Each structure stands twice: as structure tokens, then as C-alpha cells.
Length: 191
Image (cartoon, rainbow, N blue to C red; front, side):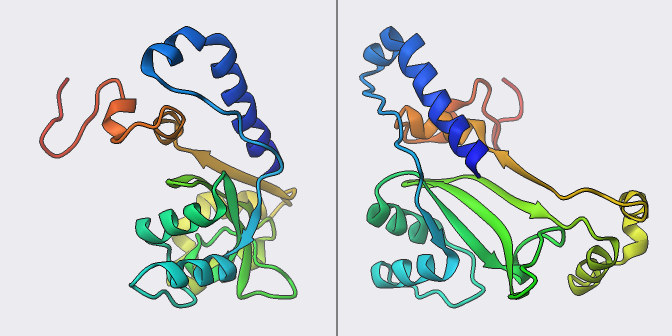
């Protein structure tokens, strides 16, 4: 999370410094986010959303776009939602040893939307097989992946960043299609 936070701040700073003329032409006053970004536990995020949105969320529900915006209105800056329920995250997200119902997963949020999801990954073969089974999947289907874990895998983590979402939120665009060179949807498959 620290690396992702540093990346976001660095990108904002570089864009602000090197693209000042373009930002001015677009009428964008780009503010570099302040570190550290708040870390909000999933359970607290649900509480914040439930105070602000009509549709109430329960433990184990994913956050709707309306809930994400409501939480963003309260937090008012980039933030992380941490400690997600293990059951709603991918099989490879590492559960806490002392609280296995929660895992070491996070979402990086802009006040308007999610920008990135990530987690510490399970590096223990037997735990990984158990989590695959718990998701109703067959370990045999993952043999190519599991094989390397039999010989030992170091602790590791990862995240994926939606670059178009980052551009959209940086420039305060109203539609993600404005951040994509050749947008595609069900009505447009060719440029």
C-alpha cells in the first residue's frame, strides 16, 4: 500500500509539474494528494455507507458505487479500505492468522471511485489449496499455479491500477470514455 500511495503522489506531482500548460487549457487545478492516505477498515466503511445511503449494506456485501461515493464524501481524499472479509475476496488473498474471516486485502479509493485492488497473496501451498476449495473450485484446475508453491514461495503481494480511472479522477472527467484513446463498449468495437 505504501508503494501504491507513493506512486499516486509521484504521478500527480509529475503531471502537475510537466503538464501545467495542458492542465490550464483543460481548466484543471491538480492538487497533489497528501500522505499518508487514511486506512479505513471494511467494517467502518460499511458503517459510513449505511449512514449515508438508502440501500443498507451488511457484512460481506461489496460496496456499490453509491456507497463508494458516500464514503468518499466523508473521507474527502484518497484513502484505502483495508481488512476485507475473506469470503468476498479472491482465493489467493491472505487471511489474517488470528482473524481468518478477514484478509490482508485493500482497495485504493478516490473520493469518486475505486482506483486499485490488491492484497498480500497466500504463499503457503496447503492454505492456498484450502482457499481454492473454500471457493468451490477444484485444485486440479490450478495445478500449473500450485506446482511452484510446493517448493516454497516467498511472501508476496500485488495490486492492479486502473490507469483510465486514475486519469479520469485526476482530470475530473465525467465519463471514463474521455480517458481512453479508443473506447470500446457493446455499441463500438472499432475506432
